[in-house]
Length: 286
Image (tube, rainbow, N blue to C red; front, side, top):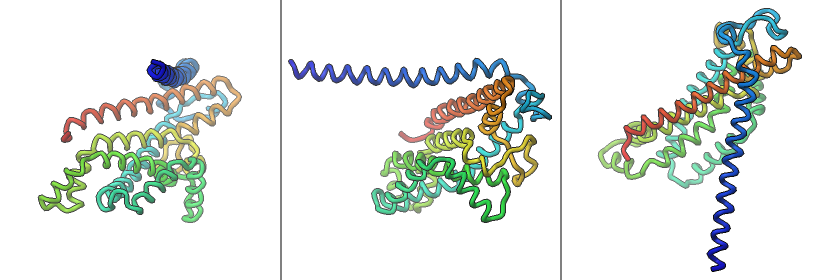
């Protein structure tokens, strides 16, 4: 009887702990959204999202943050495409051409985990060093390369975990029918893992669009829309940083409006990842 009561007490303790953790996480999200909505929503306007900063914008002048919105989308989109082109071969190599549990595969996964834990400011410093080496200036291209390096380990490990969930028997059946490793990987492995691959891309896109440290030294900042990949480009995180750094309350409210736009974009990405994953899951063999 005493042993049964102890188990019940332990179960109730961890149940309360889990409920408390959920309340803290949900409450934190609600407080963040409330603070952004309270100050950002009144400052939101059509001009805010449809025009670039004009003279004296950071001192309360007219204009908007269209340059930062477009810049963030260009940076995150270009970086996601570049990271995908590198992540897919790496993930396929780990799961098709290397034996599961081999030393090389384990070392590669360990290296990706280490890279995943490196602070984004370090990626920014590394990107800045590459810029100096190749003689590049702060530009959209330099920002894309740096953000791609930042999200590369995230996308690689996400794809790797999804590929490992595909039953090995399906690959063996493809091989028995005469398919090469590459053919089996492209026609069977990637098809079965397509929902997870889509989710990995969207999550990485959200990580890239919300990072400031990696583009601080590499992408630069401009109040104009970029005219080429070699032009400096603005981003929403840096726009928020610069607006909060001014002593003008009106401009600080615009920073919260910018944060609201960025949060909404990431929220839509998260919803889109779930919807896409559910729709694509209907086409896979379970």
